[in-house]
Image (cartoon, rainbow, N blue to C red):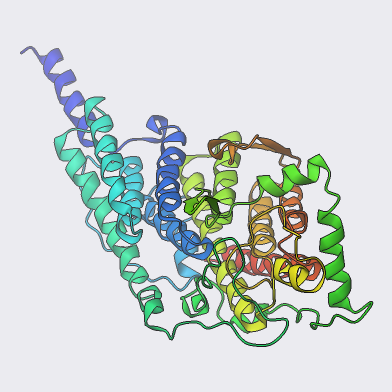
Length: 439
């Protein structure tokens, strides 16, 4: 081999041994598409809204951590230094690592481990490896090193997940609906038991004291003429009895009820739907793609929104089982019109506050701070589930529509919606204050 050929051969070997540079960065579709694979497993598992937020948070955090360790993050340690997470960065990096592969690999590993049907991600992981190896994005050694880093990041996150008290949920005393008027009890058609009554015990990421985010108490149960509760009860009845086509579309677009059941004769059929948090994760991906964020930015904002969803659900669920308020369907059927049915199927847990209002407002606060107040987008999150796309001028506009959709759907009273919005905004603003003060 002559000197010139030898020089280029050596250069070729060096390129193979080095991590990818910024110019080699893949499109963020790789991340968004693989995160949706995790969403699909949640839909298969009928993950409850709070549980889905937990799964998103840990999965996206693993991706972010892997990229931090390799030195690719622009927001190093913000999510870890200001949250309850504790991670070990003492990892020996070797040549040949592809940080993008490692981050997606870590995300999928965590999803596989923490979701009941996580094994369904085995094929996704296999296809990821096959695609990188087949297209010569990674050689054998580089693939092994990248997988090792991804496994390390996943293990770090899973250590925390194992201690967040999720595993202890099944050890709590079985929840029994309270007796007396005005309290929640199971609703048709499936009359399901209350979902996640002890979710308040799960470890938060940012909120130290849940009491600091308690909403005002709901209106006292009273059927007296012109009492706050009676007026709200009649508002739901009257609004849902004269819905416009647009209001029906809005209600269905934001339904996101993973517990929907239909009956055909004696057969119960579960209708698979995305969770409320999954809808906002979809919006986050849409915004990241439209803004052409870098890989690092995409990982960061997905993890931050996911962590916000997680904490917002814990705060909301604590209030739900503290106030334990009756659903409109139960109250209207008992006191107003026994034949009335809401447009949407009532979810199986107490009414106050509205989960959609809380988590949508928290997410909108975080996303608005990151992308700007007038960031318009076409929301295609529900197309996969058979609903049309919908255009919004801002995240705030989307959050407001998500909140009021629960009135149109006949499943929430107005104070649950309005106080839920205040609750969610407060949580989102607090999280941002911590992140902005990160060292």
